[in-house]
Image 1 (cartoon, rainbow, N blue to C red):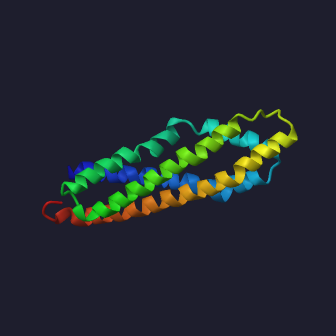
Image 2 (tube, rainbow, N blue to C red; image 1 turned 120 degrees about the vertical axis):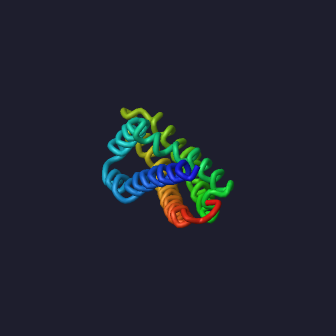
Image 3 (cartoon, helix red, strand yellow; image 1 turned 60 degrees about the vertical axis):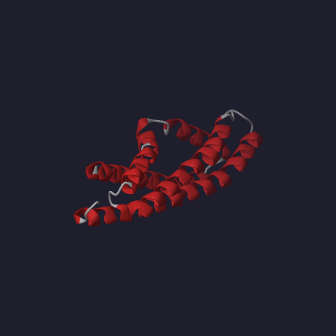
Length: 170
């Protein structure tokens, strides 16, 4: 069971790291770069990104940490590295919060932007961008911070899990 818990923690940390990196990159590079373009370029680029990102390379590290963190929590609660339990729970809560932000904030904004025809007039493209950009960037930053915090909690949990290796009942 200890090996399963170790694998779950490591895979969850990898997923959290990939998501933190992706959303941080959007915050400090992608969105500032897109902000320099005109409304049509911005809307079209985001529409392309929203379609391209829905693939296994994104979905696996985005979805897999949640069930793995639940598994790691159950194993820790049963006595496997119990000292790591609060940190695993924190990582799970932070990851779940980031997941909810994505689903309740960023995805609906993406869906609304995807409905805007790229051949719409300048006023419609400007309105669509105005309704999207600031809110999306704010929520993206929130999820980047949450994923980063989840990763930090996971790294500490992994440290505690490793330190408990020689303890009885760990």
